[in-house]
Amino acid sequence: MHVALVAGSDAGHAFPAFALAERFAAAGHRATVYTGLNWAHAARRRGIDIAELPGLAAVDTDDDADAGAKLSVRAARMAQQLAPVLSATGVDLVVSDVLTVCGGWAAQMCGLPWLELSPHPLYLPSRGLPPIGSGLAPGIGLRGRLRDAAMRAATASSIRRGERQRAAARTTVGLPAADPGPDARLVATLPGLEVPRPDWPADTHLVGPLTWEPTDDLFTRPAGDGPLVVLAPSTARTGEAEMVAVALEALSEPVLGRSVRVVVSGLQRPSADDLARFGDAERVVAGLGRQDEILADAAVLICGSGHGILAKAMTAGVPVVAVPGGGDQWELANRVHRAGAGRYVRPLTVDGVAAAVRAVLDDPGFARSARAVGASGADTVDPMTVARRVWTDRVRVGRCA
Image 1 (cartoon, rainbow, N blue to C red):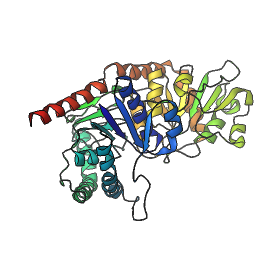
Image 2: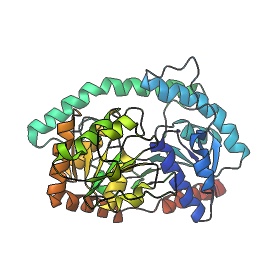
Image 3: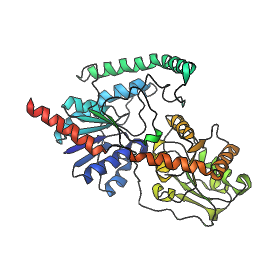
Image 4: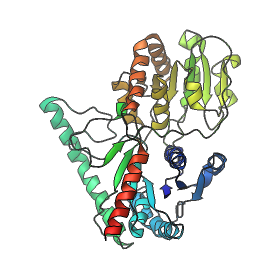
């Protein structure tokens, strides 16, 4: 089976596609990831077949300020360019990232089966939940249900507008206005980070996190014997820009009131001025290394609460201090907080980060809760099983026809 995986170039979407491509390859299938080429060197070094996603770069007529237009008009243009590529390369199955809508539409244009991949919890609207992004738990009792209903009503017009934009864009490429959706959905998160809903969609499967490391390098452990704190700034454009500088000052011994060791794990090395705010060059290491390996020794993680790094922390049983930025980070930070696996800091202040770190270090309950969330990963479905079933079902139907 030849599988095409389609994802945008942001690390939070490209990396899960790479991880899934490796799973397909290990199962004996051919997998090609269509995405941006900013990660091409790291992917190819790991043996992943990567190709540039046609039309990924914005054009002058794109209105990225309008989320509906970004997801629909651009998707239609990109699907037109991708569909002939899929046909020419003999693709049998498409896996399309939930935000990279063109993958699913191109599959429909080619008559191919396709799976939708959510590299985070399921964010579809639900009649039993407050709107995703609010960070709120489902309301309890009559007042709670009324609150959720009022919030859903407030967002309903935006959802309907997006649906109209989607329908109009589909007709421009010869697809029916009504989108039948994927043959199945893969939700790549831990069950402990998901929220139960009364309307869980059919053929939607929790498959566990799809984490991927862009390097094989390992971090050198900082000198000393204090607790190890890993600081991982967000890779998303919507992340909190000042997190590293503020967190390093919060972790300094005069502010925190104790001595800790720090590893700053990021794509960009902190500036000398930022590192100086920590104060002890012997007890801080910064650079790019395997996060899964360093988290095995960590007492706490300070992060931007993107799903990938949270999933790594929970899998390693490491509690977090989340500094959420935009996008879904506020939602995820609240889910971790409600699970008892960490705290969040908003607004970002030195004192706020220091207080949260002290609380997490002093209470072993946070680590126990993180381990419990991580252990929930045992109750997931193998994505290869779903993919093979969807493909064989389509082949069987085609032969019968």
